[in-house]
Length: 465
Image 1 (spheres, helix red, strand yellow):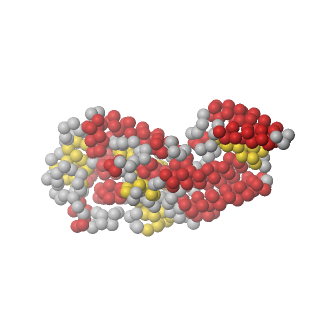
Image 2 (cartoon, one colour; image 1 turned 90 degrees about the vertical axis):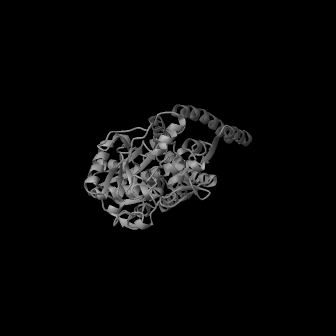
Image 3 (cartoon, rainbow, N blue to C red; image 1 turned 45 degrees about the vertical axis):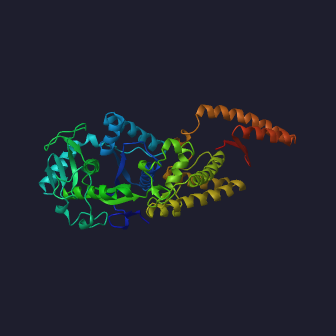
């Protein structure tokens, strides 16, 4: 089957047909950098990284644009509370997000535009909207006139204009024609950063930023716009409305990932239940956290618990264990080996990662049997299938990402040499049937955090976790 994706705007699964054959363009709403990221933020990055990897594996030339909202009401409030310039807050947290994406194995975006670098494009978009009769200037602000687009406004979120509340994006609605009108540009206020426009100095509204950046890098009509389900309204609704009102086709598919929750509440800093990436990666390795975030279907909600995180880590370790043992027998893996059809079908069916990982685990189970039987030909085939599937998911333990993110390679080499001396002594004790001494060596290694496993190919070791 071909790739099919759930389109929020159509409220159904649709076959993916790109604007340009062989190419795919994706815009992902990235970070609003008022604070460092928790795992709920980074779930979106992981989900769309899997989509991107699958599209690349499927033969698409993918352009992936992930923006940074570096000016926003929240950023300004945090900066004021700390007594620092707004750009200090934005830069500090953007670096934290970049680190988090990298540590969880997300491929770097093709382009990562900042909102503050695209004010000219925003001014041009506002001029087009005003000329078309869909926006107006008022007291230094610029607003989108929702009544002028009433027949289309609400189509993404499946709402009717008469049932909507006031936009709530300004201190007062006195400058608006209608309380539901949303701000494209906010006039100058004391202590806030400003940029010059034909309507006076001020700063951009959140929704305007993304429309300007998406069309600059992906064109007036592009393939996929992604983000969390919490962004459907008002953010994505307003993006779609202003862009199409200006004459752009904008996104042809809208994809939204589910939220990560604690105790049935959406994660947010205001609830005080954020799980920051550096803290979580003290509990599990980054690759195990990636597995935890990628394993559920991207549209489902995740109910966070320490137990579920530990179960995900254990599940990944079972996969990793087979790959490690098989790689000691098979040194050359066919990177172009075909993927199991069931795996491909799962990802083509709206990025079905739960079903795809079920295929991975089934192949690993077969691989362990082949290892026990000493069937090298079978091990070679199953190892190639496993690694190629894991590569699509960004979870291959032998990839440079995960090999270099663990222990220092020089230290690992030294430890390996010392452990092998101990294992040789253990083997010698076993050969002379001194099992007490052999068990003593194994116990001492275990106390040092080194687990020894006896295999048909001889003893192997790994660090305990």
